[in-house]
Length: 278
Image 1: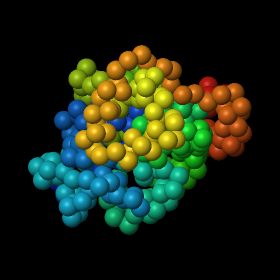
Image 2: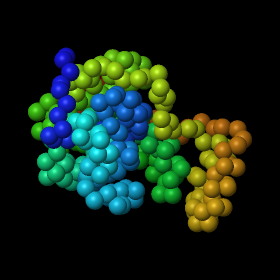
Image 3: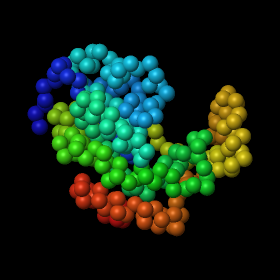
């Protein structure tokens, strides 16, 4: 497709709205290599979320997230806030994006919904709010049809691009070609300069013990910051253990909760959900 002429008359916005733990950080890093795409100084500002990121403080207007030169040059202004499609804020975020009258291009990337849950589970292990008794965390974030429902008009208008984590992982050239076509840009993304970002690591035996034990976890997170940072470094040494997975019963329960939504997602967006077992 022919390259679209840049215009400084109106900023062009490009927002990765999710889904969480589906490669959004790596995707952001790849898109940021394009000469006509300017990454926000805060990758995940959550500007339109009901719970803005702490680093968003001091940003008077949305465009303050990008340098003036990028705006004047008519570059796409890129950010990636997964909060825009999370189960508790998607509707609010979609409304606020419309109210801002910025007419953005949106990208939503998905992966096997069970694998996404397990990835969020292991990511949550390192957060203070982690509860080892609640294994099926973030179930709502795997309900892709529901999460995209507030953005239905963007899809109908051709302003929402759906991407596949499997393609990002196995055929990034094909994925960037689709992005370039969607944005009406030349496919000049620099894949060689980008590595996998924000990868969820398997815990060490000590981390697994501390984070999953209610008493030890509470003592750890209540300790002074400097002490906690020192312990974080020490706990990364030693033998690794397997990442947490859903057992057979939990997987069956998750499939039951997700089945109707994922099938609607497949039908609406013409996506092959059969490869996920739905």
